[in-house]
Length: 212
Image 1 (cartoon, one colour):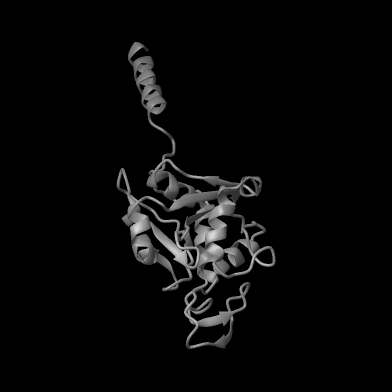
Image 2: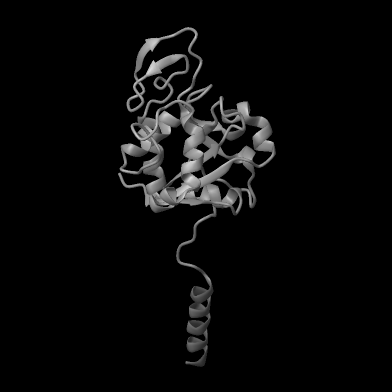
């Protein structure tokens, strides 16, 4: 009997110190998987194209303009969020011209906080983890030249195994000088390289988690 109870005690001890279910730090939730599918459904590779005047909500080209070099990063982000009932500065409250610069200011404002936007300033792991939990996470930079646009993009949910990740490990969903899903962060923001190096890019997530 003593041996039996001793064995039971050992078994109970093992179960007590062994978690029933555990997840790696970079594991994606179901909401994040649904968020990835949503990003893919937006067809950003073929819409919101540089060099075209576009319908900001749909990304459809309204006309080709060979001398029109503007990109549509901010319109794409605004349109995607609107489809899920999340507000970021957008038409008609502001024109699409240089909109990313003004979205940067909006995200830092009281109005932005009231709309659920919270800055993430605790490192790359925290940024990726929020995306992997199923939240919309945006990276945004304001151009120091008011006559030029900044840039804004979504952080793509992505598993990771490294204990500590950096900017090179992040991927984005964007319209811009290149359009696509899962673009390496440094490539997506390469037109703002100096600002990236100076740490001028800010990251925000919206408190409304993605729902399919």
